Length: 342
Image (cartoon, rainbow, N blue to C red; front, side, top):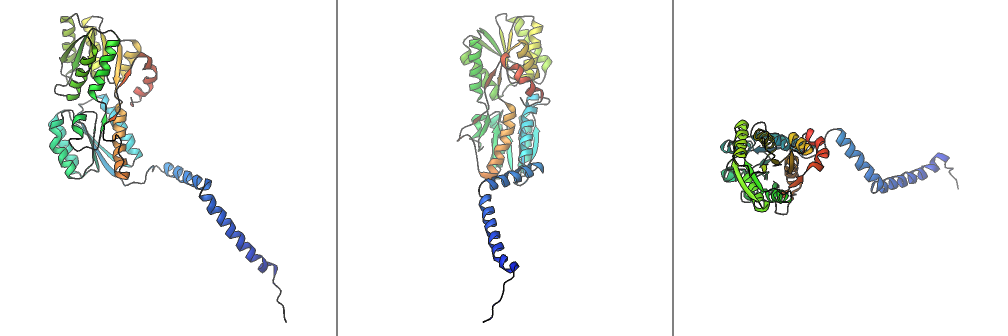
């Protein structure tokens, strides 16, 4: 009987194969725990470095607001929307017009473009009913922001993002009462704007003292300044002016200087001059609705809805305010107001 001697190399091959299988098994096991997490983290870092935070399609979202020209408040809303769009791989289209009929036409243009999502303000809600019905018929998901909460669900929107204006007004009135203000002049700068009426109405309900409403033209600031000053000179009982926007707050401060009377200025919304006024004590308080969040969350929620059928609010509006801000908050706010995100 002959015997065949196996070479050392051939004897080692089965051992090497077994070791290879064992190594593969260990590697696979590692990928299912810590190694897997590390791999995922590495892929996430690589994706972020390449500028692609998400892998969803390049959807197109339009925002159409009732903003007038040069209103810094809407620059903040837009900045939030643009930053969310960059994160979510979305092409963002912005348009605005203070004239309601022109805003309707801008919404129609977005529908005609077959955008993948639509954000819209409803300052004069009834006028938007038909065109939002067309958006719904076209299968375009709609979220309302900032104004028109009471119309949002009725017009088929997924949700509304902003502050309840009556609630915000009530918060302002409560603060006025706490500060001992006895005779308040609430300045509405856009007649027919439902949200502004609700702010003054809410404040009237909780302020406790005498309460008056003055209508001015917010597009013509010199005339608005003159109207407020004339009212203060004609009625020496007024001890507080309550404005409804950051730009109007600046005009109100000028009117108080013109009237040469010790009148407190309080306001809704922020801005560089409002924060400076809080710090200096020329502005008593500001009611902040966080406009950056309205833009950011609006775009981000449309992305979440299209990518995963997610929606916040549980059928109720998503609140971004109100927050009462005073002199104590001024230093911390200044940095963020300067960069345009508060």
